[in-house]
Image 1 (cartoon, rainbow, N blue to C red):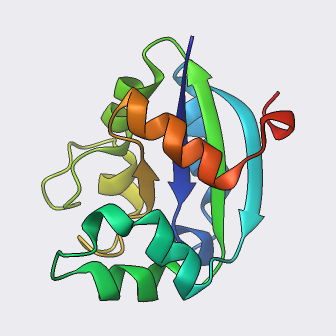
Image 2: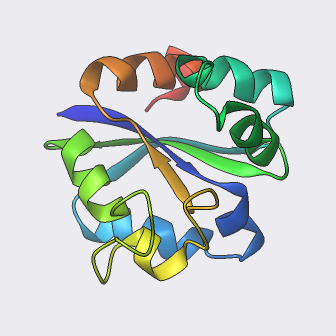
Length: 137
């Protein structure tokens, strides 16, 4: 059983579609092992997205991710990383397949509703950023 991190981003939280997004995960074989609603500071977002520090969108991303509450989750299941990424759809919602989370709920490439780990290695790091072992059930 794999674990991966999922974040419901500020745009989707503001639209009040948290439950609809969670239903997509649960209806497709992913179990929520941990979940909390938090508000990131700009510094938190900066540390989390540090891998993108040299990219031109880094500051805007940190600003956006700290603009409102997010829901962070540990999802668990067979091939959880790949399954979550399939459910999310392409980063650009205009390119996302119909029925994916981003096609249905995202506003733009920046405000794209959800984040998901892109590898098992990154999932471990990202999960540890947000959750203590005792919080993952």
